[in-house]
Length: 120
Image (cartoon, rainbow, N blue to C red; front, side):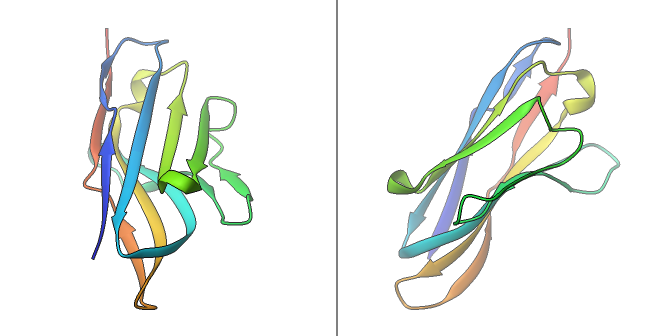
């Protein structure tokens, strides 16, 4: 009923920037907290950043000052602006959202993941 579709990943040189997007579609009534996670090879998935529906931001220590999360509620879309990228930022990035549908069902939704590779 609800899909999250990510875009914007790719190969970038160290020091470069990327902007990830995640668009939600389906029978959406409202979206609560949205977040970005990442999973590097051989590592567990970790939270990068989140925004609650009330505008409370949360960043991992590694993301502070480097990444910026944002959301456009009118478009049901979230973004992750990533600057000064380093090879350690290489990972598959996933968006996540708590969604209340028009049928009053609550889903914890995930995007399909987008690869970000930082390499020269």
